[in-house]
Image 1 (tube, rainbow, N blue to C red):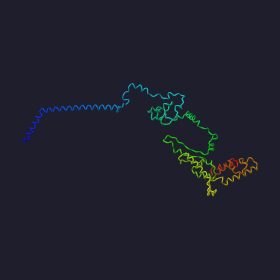
Image 2 (cartoon, rainbow, N blue to C red):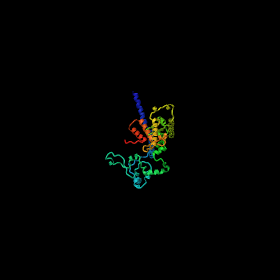
Image 3 (cartoon, one colour):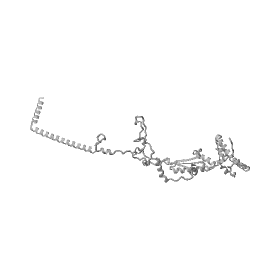
Length: 380
């Protein structure tokens, strides 16, 4: 234990004598000077790097990140106030409009409602209570309700007159002899109906435009009783008995012209098919008929023989008051007799009486037809 303590004391004395020696002091001075130089150089380098980064940030901010100035937060300079006053909107157009102006030049085509071009007051809108807009309907100024719907300010009488004048040289005179609907139907019994559709879209085609339709009256076709009955059975519900009108329509083909040709082909095919008489149809008797037909029944022959007898009696008696003046001189020609209006009225009355049954209308029409046919005068 004593030896260890002696050794520690000797080492401490040696270290103290080295610290006090001039060599240790010289080394310490050189080391401290080096530390000062390093500290100063690092400080200068940090300052230079900070300066460079500040310059770079300032440059970036000035070039890429400009400051957004919100209008109204800063007072506008007095020099720009003159420019702002010069950009004011002009007064509405209707203030400078003359009274006798041409309205077709003001509003030539269809456009949205413009309050500044309307010289008359217009109001539209809804006021919920008396506190809203002082219970007054909004005027035309900045009125969205007037801008929503379409207007007809481009279709005044002046506009229509100009339009008619522009297309007048494309029109032809209305043909003579077609003043009434009856004249048109007489010369043009077949009516074709087509439609064209115009709308704003990616394509101009419309599936509805290919539809074609033709209409005609069944009485305009040259058909006898058998052909007419067969024609009505072939067309089915396309025939309207109330108007005596037949309608053919089609949209199965891709083009309108093709559908129009197809319905005309249907009319031709049904017409010639109705005239065909099958073998089993020839064995059909009067009792097998669905309706009473005066032309093929005994009543027509009886009526013709009665009129021939009356004509012979009138010629023999010479009494002009009781004569049937509507009869022709030659009553032997049955076709000319059947074409008389009195015969046709009697025929229609008999067919309605048999087919529709006895009622007030059929009995009255039958009575009038007989009185006219036989020239009877009754006070009842």
